[in-house]
Structure formats: C-alpha cells, structure tokens
Amino acid sequence: MQKIYIYDSVEKRKRLFEPIHEGEASIYVCGPTVYDEAHLGHARSALSFDMLSRLLASAGYRVKMAKNFTDIDDKIIKKMADTGKSLKEITEHYIKRYLDEMALLGVRRADIEPKATESLDAISELVERLLEKGCAYRTSSGDIYFDTSKDSAYGSISHMIGDEEESRSRVSHTQEKRNPRDFALWKGCDEKGGDVCFDSAIGRGRPGWHIECSAMIEKHFKGDGRYTIDIHGGGADLLFPHHENEAAQTRCATGHEIAKYWMHNGFVQIDGEKMSKSLGNSFFLKDALALYPGELLRFYLISVHYRNDFNFNEEDLLSAKKRLDRLYRLKKRVVASKRRDADPLFKERLLSAMADDLNSSMAMSIIDEMVADTNDKLDKKPADKALKGEILGNIAFIEELMGFGGSDPYEWFQHGIDNETKREIEELIRRRDEAKKEKDFATADAIRERLGQKGIALMDTPDGTKWERL
RNA sequence: GGCGCCAUAGCCAAGCGGUAAGGCACGGGCCUGCAAAGCCCUGAUCCCCGGUUCGAAUCCGGGUGGCGCCUCCA
Image (cartoon, rainbow, N blue to C red; front, side, top):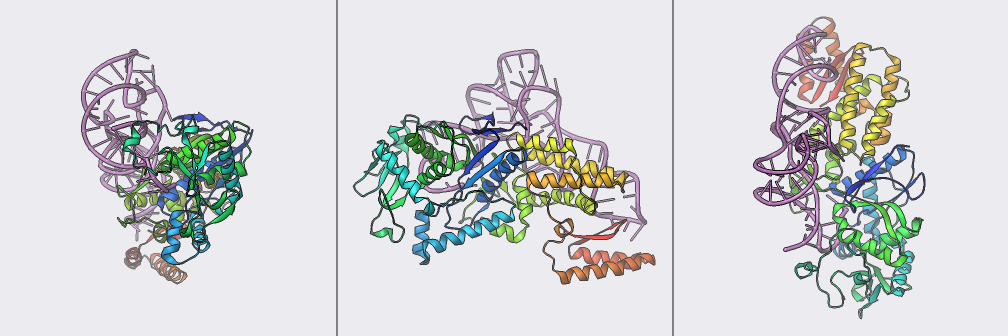
C-alpha cells in the first residue's frame, strides 16, 4: 500500500499516516456555518479535504468522511431577524447552495453530513457528562461553560498557551466566566432566543459552537480508546480556539484525544488583500462560477499547495486555464479510442506526489510532463491505438485522483456557447473549407479573422478543422 | 503584548542537507498555403547579513518586508 505522509499541524511536521483501524481512514472536516453564500475560502477548504479523501481512496483505504453543517448560530439568528425567515428556511437554502456549488467544483459529498439541529441528543449528552465530571459549570443565566482550568492539556493543540496574553486578550471578560478562556457549551434560553430554543436533558437552550463537533465525532465514529478519528481538518483559522476547545471537551469527557492527525488549509486572498464583503472583491463562489467553469476554479485553486496562502486573481486564473486547456487538447486527440490501463509509472508518480502531504503542485507538473511526452509520441505515431488508449487511462486516473480532466474535451472548449452560435460557426467553417479547396486563401483567411474577432480560434488538423473558444 | 506562517526567474509555483520541477509570458526553430495547435531549444544560485556542514534555497541566529491567529470566521 502506498505510504502516505501528511503534515500534522499540532506536531508541526510531516507524519506517516498510520490509521487507527487497518485499511480504514476516518476524517472529520469542519464545514460551514450556513447563514450566507459560500466564498472562495470555503471552496479551498472543501477542495483540500476532497483531495485528501481521493488520495486515501486511490491508495486503497476505505474512507469514511464527515463534514458538518453548523445550523444553529448567532449569525443565523441575526439573519432570521433581518429577513423574517425561519431558521430552517435559511439553513436549508444555504446548505443546498453550498452542496450545489461544491459539486460544480468536483467536490465529492461526505459520507456523513451531520447538522447541529440533528445532533442535539448527542450534544446534550456530552454536556451532561462534562458537568458530571466537573469540567463544566452552570451560570445564573442558565449558560453552561467549559472550565478550561480542568484540562491540564489545554493548549496542546494550538500551542496558544500563555499567562501574559490575558491582559491583552480581546476576549470579553464576561463576569460569569471563571476564566477568560472558558467557552460556552450551552446557551440558556431567554426571551430573545425566540424559536431557536431546544428542550434537552440539560435544560432549554441551544448549543455553543465548539460542542457540536465533539458530539458528532463521538456519535459517528468508533476509535481505539486513544483516538476517536484519524484526521481532523479545517481552515487554519479554526486551529484556535475552535479545535483547541473541541479537543479539550473530548479529552475531559472521554479521557482520550479526539483525533490522531490535524490538518489545516491556508487562506485565500483576493488581489493581495484579505477577502471581505466591504472590499467587494469577488468574494463569493457564485460570482466566480458565473464567469468560469467550476472545473477550472478547482484546477486553479489546487495549483497551490493547500497549506500555503492563495492569492486569487484573474491573471493567474487565465494562465491556469491555458494550462488545463493543454490537457483537454491532448484528450481531444485520443477521446475516440478505447480506454486502456494507465501508464503504471505515471500512476505511481502522480500518486506519490499526492501522498507527500497532498503536493498537488508537484502532481500537476507530472501531468504537464505526461501531456508533453505523449503529445510528442502522438506526433510521431498518430495511429498508435495502444498509446491513445493508455493516454485515456492516464486522464481517467487524473480525474479520479485530482478531480479534473473528466469533461468532454469538445464541450470543454465550447463552454458558454449556445447551439445556435455553434451552428453558425460550423457553417462558416464549411464555407472556409470550400474556399481552401479552391485555393481562395483570401476568403478563407477572412472567415478565420471574422471568427477570431468573436473569440473563436480555428485549427486545421488531419481530421478536419476544429474550433475552440479562447 | 502572546503564538505562528511566508519571502525561489517578468508572473504563478514545487523544492523538506547533495548541487534549482512545472505552467504562463518572451525569443528562436520544426510543422503549416498562412496560421492555430503540437513538439524542440532558450532564462534564476533561491530577500539581506552572519553561523553550522565536505556540502544549504533547504538547518541555526540576527535583520528587512508581507501575512495570519489570539473576537465570528474556511
């Protein structure tokens, strides 16, 4: 079995992946809070862990991945007040939008997609255990806080411990908190709570943010007594306090660590600036998807290693488009052939690159080399059926592992062009072919020029004239 | 104030102690009626200064310049 190394952001080093259960890989990724449209950062996170899951599956692991939707939250409550809509109307809308958009990026669905509203039993049960063990306390207002002083290992995940920082900390010093680091497990219901109050064994209220992940993980996964899951993932911003708090809750309640490995993806910036609504800088995924195919966005977003910062800009995206076009031009040359097994050496190299902490940049350079190499062979032996079949096999493996290259190559180059226009283009090509037959190159070139102005490029091949949208 | 990340050719970007992948752009060539596409060739000693080492872009120390977390956040 392919050895897989992943960078563990807690130990800050690459570690050989050795799962809790032989041949299985359990992953939990922190998903979005569903109160608004998904942005490019959500896409990058989803893409990072989609690559991880594809890698593990390709390497022969049985993968069980969970990605949650936080559907109880202050921001959702605010949205309810702003729009007059119910919690369910809001969260279901954005969950669907999220899933649809991620599907366009080629992100596979998680095996389990738990929601906070559907995990309340597990949550209240976990809070109850924490109360029993003395790791949590109630306040006069009915809130329940986690007592960080009861966890001697608190800080071991993010390494964000320090006594001095408290004076500078921007954490509000709620009087009811015993320690500034303590955080809400459960928020008691008051009149303002409206319809987001739930009855439970620990009283009426709603869960805090961090508790849902710990509860869902304990509910859906069986560990080995030392760890519950293999890999816990999320955006770099979640390392502290979110993941620190999750780990503390699970440790106090169960006596073991929540995850064996921790992975965090880097941030997305827009034109060198932090993404924000106020800057109005192509913030939402839907805006990008309105302009470019999801597959291209995927290709572009994974061209940078997942742990590095990503600076999104149109110029780089366009150069990524040209790079991906090369793969599709190769595919055009072989698509009519019968698929064969991929080149074993190519497969091995691609898998090894990804097995080295998801080195997608390296993987893409290997793909580029394969494209150049096989184009060259095809130039020399245009009728080599075995080669063509193997190339199709290579591309199928790329699609399986990397999630791009699976589209029809002709449609790829005709993205966004309606059938009416296609017919017009083909008619002009016919007229140009006739002109060429009669050696009337002036007319032929005029037609090519005319199409070129519309962004259509022509290329004469042994199989006739092909066209592409630039 | 605490914790941490990053700095590689015009641009994007790998590299994880053994002598700089890949892509885009540029230039030259082959091919082509001419093109496009494809293929081939062409470019960097790795922010600066010290140190460790037979050997450093890669390790250590110090600068400079970006960025992030510590409050909801992918």
